[in-house]
Length: 185
Length: 388
Image (cartoon, rainbow over all chains, first blue to last red; front, side):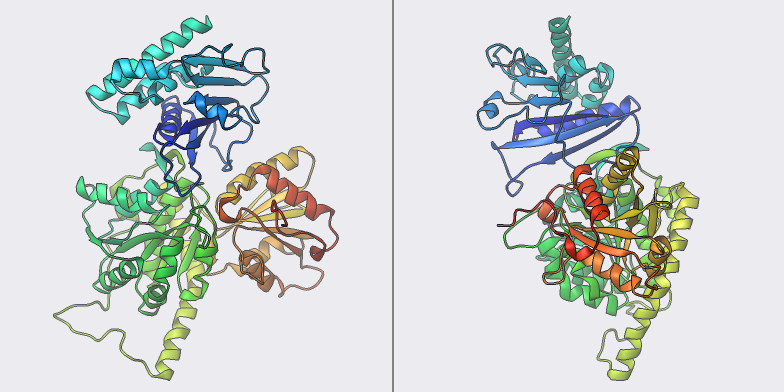
């Protein structure tokens, strides 16, 4: 079983990203479990929140929060000023960040985990016209972890947003996937 | 059809597939997405039911009781403070013998405000005459919602389907959605049989009952709560026959040769399955007993599962101030029937209050504490709390 913790700000679609991962896993014939941890009274626009996703090839019985993730996704790198996003991250784990900065600039090279960055904001702005970043991070996650297939990620996005919006988001998934595949090859 | 759904969506699917005819509801976190999903289903024509918007949970239950007396299948959902506001009407629903089904998403009582999981809301309704069914996963949530209508209508007693806030209500996972026709085959349209509010055949409902008939009517509720144990077992069997998924009022997991049994309900039971497997891998003889029904309390089955065991550790995500964990109290009261030789020592732990996590680590800590202790009164029952 692989566990992912997503750090984002309320309104960035952290839970939707986790749900996309679970839906893609189902498409792949696997099992996914996605859930939020909001804090406060649940209404948290702009505040740091978390979402979790577990992926497994058999049904998932574990129903506690993810404390020792294999993967961490950071939707807004400024959250790193407020909390340690790599807390509990397994050695050899992966961190995926939405940022313009490089891994070196963020001081994340030479750590016991591997860090990857993508400017999901720019990609989403260019294709969607708005900085809605979860589909860009979904494609990037598929590329760097191989936990979900590109095809399933595309299907998950198209099933959530039928029509033109779905096609645009599918383009975001494809481009982010390709970008991370190029970077890591 | 297999689909990724939250626990709250699973409840809504359960109610819709059951052919509910009246929904009356008032929003409250973390339940709100149940009634939002039902409203969407009605708007999209997926469900053919009347949706009554009310000004409070008290009115929601009053509307459900009235609709149920009118002879139709009724449903509502609530959480925490909403359930507390319904309290008066919960007693009325069972007294009036209306088989209303309510989904309660467990939410901790205020003050201070807290929206997270804690069973104290539903367990506080112990004396209201409602059947209470607790769930550990979203498939069980959907299936139990469907079964709850059948159980309630057979007994003419209201039934509560209970799921943990966030750990189920807002957790998405793949579940099997049964075909509507298959559900109809399992659960035909509600037939109130002998009596309902019918202008062509007028009756008086809920008029004053003098002491003797009142006591008789209360006795009938008790009698039917006892009968409920076999009705629930039959409905579980029937459901398994139709859909291939079997549920139990009391279920052992790696329990037979266990030295220390952990007793869990709700999502803690699901995580405990993983914890017990991990303990077995460490060479420990750990086991789990999951209890699904709180009312009626399945005493005979619990005795069957625990008789002759040395120690049991009950994990309560709830508490009764001054009396500690509620499941532990109930368990002790049924185990006192056993002889000293057959009766396990009961360790009652409080964990996960107000949505605190109950992890594999928590359950392992409880197991080892119990294993190493000589007497239950030696231990600190509150797990993971700062004593400040």
